[in-house]
Image (cartoon, rainbow, N blue to C red; front, side, top):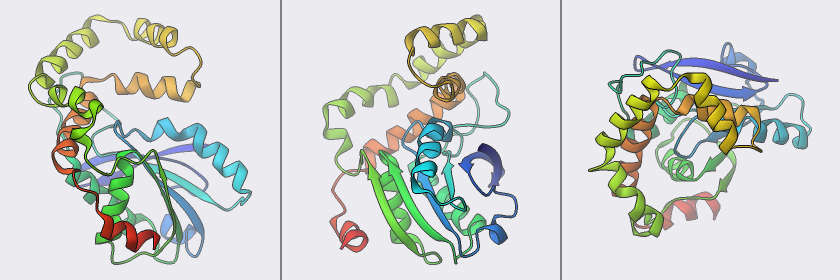
Amino acid sequence: MIFQDWVEWRGEKSSVVGVGHRVSGSLNNLHDKEMFLIIPGNPGLAGFYQEFMKSLHGKVGNPDLSIWALSHAGHHRPEVSWIPAEKTYGFEEQILHKLELIDRLIPQSTRITLIGHSIGCKIIMEIFKRNSTHSFTGVYFLFPTIENMVGTERGRQVYPLTTLLRIPCILILSLLYIILPKQILRTLLRRFLKDVPDSVLNTVHVLANPNYVNNCLVMAREELDTVLDLDTSTLKTMFG
């Protein structure tokens, strides 16, 4: 059974989606237990990983296993305006967000396996470098984005959207968000995303809010500017 909880972080509420033990009481319930922790890519909405978590939980075969996905700060809020004026968070802040939630919500005795997707893999590398409290029993990278992002063809295409074109794009999206009824937006998304599960469609619908798109672009700008040379030293520490 998939759950969604909201956790406080520096005055911001962010989403935790998961299977197994919930956030409430986690320091007791996860003591000496096994858990998988998913660090998303960008966009960083944990809702995108619901089907993956359900499948993984069933395959592992441990009924007491907990699997959490931590949404990035600012990428999903319990309440949000359509006006793109909410606080944004860069790549460094997203790293601190994950470190602080791990420290606050997960006991040190928990056997944690980290799963990173895309830029989430680079965040995991930073967690390994900076963590001083928890032990990690395993690490898995899914489509890792950990070096020279801006030098790729996709990086060169995206970079203008994160700089000169970011504000015009957000203003246009805001206008569409105002004039387009939500039901029509959902119908259009269903037409273009015909074969995706409802959980993915619902998450894309959430992501359409201009504040969330703005946060994604702000984070992407910092990723492109800072994720450059491959950190071979940290990889050797992690994988031997």
